[in-house]
Each structure stands twice: as C-alpha cells, then as structure tokens.
Amino acid sequence: MGSKSTRDKFIKPGINEGDNEFLKVGGHLVNYVSSKFKRETFQQPPPPPPPMSASGGTTYTPGNGYKYHRFSEPNSDNFVVSSLSPDPIYNKIDILIVAGGGSNATPAPYTGGAGAGGVVHATNVAIPAATTYPVTVGAGGATGPNTRNNGSDSTFGGHPIGTITAKGGGHGGYYPGNPGNPGGSGGGKQDAPDSSGTGTQPAQNSPWTPQPGFNQYGNPGGAGGRSGAYQAPGGGGAGEVGGPAPAAGGSAPGGYGGDGVPISGFEYPKFGLDPINVATEGNSPTSNHYGGGGMGWGYVANPEPGRMRSAGGGGANNIGPVPSYGPQNGTDGLGGGAGASGGGTGGDGIVVIRYQTS
Image (cartoon, rainbow, N blue to C red; front, side, top):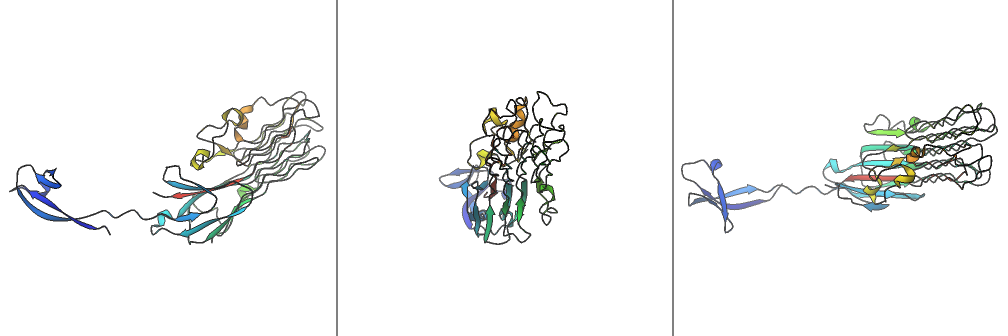
C-alpha cells in the first residue's frame, strides 16, 4: 500500500473538480480563476518490490535491468540465494551453461577437429527457495603427446526439477582407425571408414526439456574424407555439423569447425568481459558465439577464416604431415573445440546467471 498525503486544491466555482486546471504557486496548486479551495487526500504509488538477493561468482550490473553472476573458472562454486522477492516475477533466472571443448594431441597430423562443449540456454527458470545452488564450470580437454580428451561437463544443480548439464565436447579422431569421440558436440573423424563423434547434448536433461524457454545445442563432427592419411573433417559446433573433408585428397584444407550459437542477452560486455576479437574469431562487439568446433587437419590453410566466428580452435594451417604451426587451442569461456593442426587444449566452459532487478 502507498502512503497517504494531503494538498490544498483550489476549486473554480460552478465547474466540476475534474475540469479544473491548476498552477503551482508557493507550494500550493492554485486555480487560474478561483480563490476557493478544499483539502484533498490522495494515494502515493507503492514502491517497487525488492529484487531477489544472491551472491556467487563475479557479479556485474550493466544497467539493462539485470544483474549477472559470471562463473568462468573451471571449478565448483555456488549461486547462493539469500532472500526471495515478494513479487514472483523477480524470482526467475535466465541461465547460460557451456561445457569445455574437446582437445587434440600435440602434434596431431591426420586428425579430425575436436567438438565444442554443449550449450544450454534456459529462460524464466523459477527459483523456488532461498538456498544454495551448486555450479560447476567444465575445463577444456587436456592435451599432450598422443593425448586427447573430451572436455568436462558444466552444471547447475540444486533445483527440484533436476540438475542441468552441458556435456563436454568430443576429441577428434586420428589415423589410423580411431573415430571421433561423442560429446556435447562430436569430434571429427579422420579416416573415411571411421565415424565422427555424435553430438549428445540434444538428448540430455530430459526432466527439463518440456519446460518453456529451455534450449540446448550440439552437433556431430563432419563427414567425408578418403581412406588413408589425408584431410580430416571439422569438429561439431553448437550451431551446425562440422565441415566435411574433401574426398579427393591432394593439396586441400580440412573441414571447418561447426559454428557456435549467439545467445541474446549474454554477450560478453553484458557481464563485464571484453568483446571477442572480430578479426580472429569473427564475433562482433555485440554478439559472440558459444560452442564452436575445431578445424580438421589439412595440407594447406583453410580459406574460410570467417568460420572461426564459432571460436573453436583454428586448425588445418600446416603443410605436409608434420605440423608447422603451434597448438590450436579452443577459446576459453566459449567452450571451443581444439583444432587439428598442432593439436591443442579445448576451451574452458562458462556458466552465467542473470535476473531482473528493475
């Protein structure tokens, strides 16, 4: 309820109060014609309700009516709700969960690009209680000589519907006879008879999938190629299947990494991070793509650097069977898959939570 106040209101004779026009003079509302007045009581509008109060991660308030909590280091943390708002509209969160991308061995000739970490975006998730909600940020897959790994999962837990999980990206396949690994997005294969890894993210989180505003993204590694030590397909991205390898072999690039996906309201500047470098990753200052696959191995540089807007590790920039370039790491915070040229680590994942404050 709003508070009550009084004011002196001057009334013009013979005319209804609702038809009067008033002029404020010396703190009073004075009618242009009359000197008659009466005292009136009116209702002040109530103040807005306080928003939900929470802590955890790195907080940022960009002035768009939301408060953001960013969890960007690979570890376990907590989103702690200390009090709920009396208005249920302020007790809902939007959440972005990105897993770690897959890796490739160093060096990694004749290797498919690694798959990106799975991406989950859920809106208007009701927070039912003031309590602790565990958060885990998945690391990108580790690399080393003859060492390739899937990325680690990222999660948001403690909710009565269940834990939300983004699956780590699959590592790339390698010659001879080692297929791409399944993951949030799958790793690209290498040899034609082999298979690329499947993208498992769309099959996750079954208790959540009927919920309105719940979306998840992941795709398989690329197809194509020919039998033997030749170019390899790219890793799957959150936005599309990894690019195919050429069937003819010869001096050609490997497959591009599948694109990531832009998530509206979760652009880096909104929660205090610098925009992604447009020249190298293809992102814009207002939109970055999450979950891009790594490029597959090839004999020449891939002519489509714009495909790196997915922020998967760049691959395929080597000549001959011995890589002449360094590791092609996935991008941290975007869950990018490693490229295949010099191998490399997968990009770390991220979890970002936002809720209305006004």
